[in-house]
Length: 460
Ligand SMILES: Cc1cc2nc3c(=O)[nH]c(=O)nc-3n(C[C@H](O)[C@H](O)[C@H](O)COP(=O)(O)OP(=O)(O)OC[C@H]3O[C@@H](n4cnc5c(N)ncnc54)[C@H](O)[C@@H]3O)c2cc1C
Image (tube, rainbow, N blue to C red; front, side):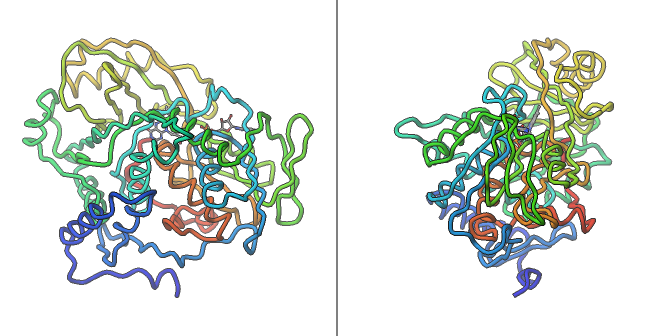
């Protein structure tokens, strides 16, 4: 059966009906282990067309690109980069197939510049495409169970998950787009509510709503966590399950016809492999170039500002302002950021303090007048691994190479996708298809076919 043939909808299914049915299914299955209960709940037998786009039905018979050819009995996988992506993959590979050989090559075990260690590590259901919404639904299910899933002996990692929601705000121009994305979220059974200006004023008395028309608040499944704790928990568990971490730098790949046969390290060592996975984050383009592949992923600096504010403000979610800044609580303080106008590649990882005074502080004080009294405490900078083609993940093999797989280009939403993407790439390697969640909308092939995935809710 073709994949397209698996798309269908119930003509009688209203958005509300489908959402309600999916919620019941989710509640029933919430006690089950791993990702599957949420995935089962959201695929259902019903589909709703929202915003002119059709969500897809997950199917365990979905055929992926089968990298590396037919299933191999003893895969030997080399993962380049041991950040949250590489470590999530190593975890899933060794969990799904304990006999698999996995070597994660990481050049900096302190993760000083890794995005995973510098991330704001927030998760939202509020995307505009079904694939991104479903990834987040599955991810939040995993994060809630991370202490059990990733425990090593009696050491249970605490990733400090806080589900305090995202609040997207829109003025008159942005309201239609927010409504359109909301329809898709509801179709996918995300728990998100639209709020008019009066409702915003009522719930968030500290917000200046004078130029707002609409807000969209995530009621469940959104918030933030400790990204570094998640990374180290994945890595520790992957090691316990048999993955090997090598502290070395990858400086070359040996390509023979349409396969990568070896990974070459800077100390001259060569590692033979059946599969290589590029999990090099903002440096992924360089790894791709070693195999002659052009990858549209660029390192774009983002500054995170740590701010204190003397005023007490209750029920503070992660706010996305129409001007583009985001802000959320972090302990007793706040962290905030935005996409700079001058967005060059590979800028040194020094925070841009000038932009706080010049742009962010006035914008913050406009939206939340109490922030006139705010103080900048400190700041740090990390790289978004920006996919300039369409700002979404680039997954799976490149058409010219069977066994080189990519998990790159997350453009600011990679931390929250790691638990699910790690599993998806592991399934591709082990089974040649996506089993738990069909993420084929994110395959590398879309670039060659010039089919960008339009995601309206990118926080660039
Ligand atoms: C400031 C900031 C805020 C963010 N906020 C969020 C958020 O709120 N929510 C969200 O979901 N995402 C967020 N992100 C994005 C998210 O953090 C990233 O998408 C994610 O961490 C990417 O993980 P990674 O493992 O691919 O990359 P990284 O964590 O960068 O890991 C890549 C690793 O590869 C290694 N490496 C590179 N080249 C080589 C080589 N040649 N040899 C050996 N090792 C190599 C590096 O040392 C590095 O450790 C944010 C990112 C930043 C910077």
